[in-house]
Length: 370
Image 1 (tube, rainbow, N blue to C red):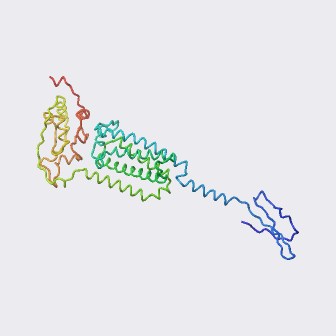
Image 2 (image 1 turned 180 degrees about the vertical axis):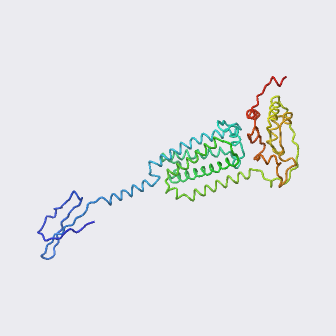
Image 3 (image 1 turned 120 degrees about the vertical axis):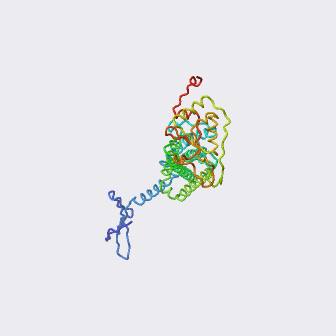
């Protein structure tokens, strides 16, 4: 911006003369105007300010910092965190997938038998696919995307924006699923612990918040519709899967009561354990149509099963609108079979060794022989 300082009569001047003030960073340029006989010297002062350039540079730098693709600080760091957390989750779910496919028991340092009950429950399968396998794929995708985005080397010529889009959608779905599973854990398995479930939930939430931090709130707000759609889709899919897997009264209109036959013979150990369970008041709650209840009795054998305190929850058969026996309703049966030993609840069929451990049974072979 130029400002007029003064006009005065003056003789001719040297065109090359320029007046510069170092204190004000301004340049005074003398101009000669001719109008007939009059000669006037016009002094124009031009401020050599770098404010406009600085503002432009600031705008440029702001645009660069606001763009996740060019941010080499927080974004790359967030991608590395995603890769690390995704790798840990991948290892955990790979271990659980192996156990699920081989039908092996998980090592549960916290929670004991309840941990295994949760991992082997009907909630551990979604549309017939083991839940740990789905988690393993999800964690693997996040870990791979974190590595590729951090290096800015996406395969198949995928644009970085598309990679960030997939990463946000994946971590959002994982966080939504973890929140849903925590709800199931608190309502369907009250008072029980599942260390692997809690670790997976912590990892999922950490991945989601790390992704949000790396992309920036402004970028995430643009994809709010995507996130809400993913959350609704995950909740709807899980609810539909679990509702379909749970037996309902509408599936069977009437089923008369029938006695089940036990074909196996009892070992001395099974007989001693059955006597011990009966003596301490341990009870097994079941239903005549329950295959797991039948399998549990087969584990004890014919002789030992007759010694158990077994409570039939549908002694008069089952038909639409039938309520289970009052004794079963009072203990809030959630699945069959269910054991209550010294106040501790065990859901599902149990190994004899687990029942002995929970009940405090010590087997003495010499006393049995005598």
